[in-house]
Length: 190
Image 1 (cartoon, rainbow, N blue to C red):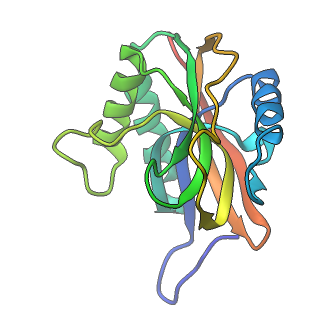
Image 2: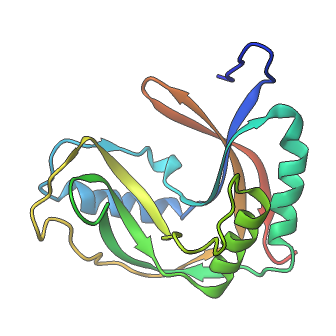
C-alpha cells in the first residue's frame, strides 16, 4: 500500500538489508521456542534480516537515485563473513520490545553501513555508526514486557556465514504486519 497525501507523490517505505541463510533462522527460531518468554509475535522467517540503513518513506520518482546510491555505497567492497554472537533483548534495560541475534561487526560491514548512512540518512549524524548495533530481530513483544534475568541464553551455534549481497527492500505496512519485497539486489565484490 502506497500512502498518497493530497498534493503529494506516492511514497515507498525503503530500507537496505542483509539476509542470513534460512537454515540459521530456523535454528534460531527453535532456540527461541524453547525459552520461557511471554507471548510474542514471531518475525516471519523470510523477513529476518539485518538492517543496514532504514531510508523511510521515499517518493517513487526518487527510486532510481536510491538504487544508484545503494550500488555506489557497495562499490569496491568485498563479500564478508558475519558471525552470530548472542541472543539479546532490546532495549537492554527496562521492558523488552524484541529479542534478536546480535552479530559481530566486521570492518566491511561497518564501512558499508557508514557509506549507506552518508548517502541515504535523512538526518546524517557526525558519526553514522555511533548507534549501529548489528542484529537480526526474531520476535517482538506487544506491549513491551519484563523478562527475568537469565531468560535470554547465549547462542549455542555461532558459525559465521558469508554475506555477498545486500538488498534494497520495500516494506508495506498491513494490520497483520509488514510485507517485504525486494526492489534491487547488489552483489559485493563486483
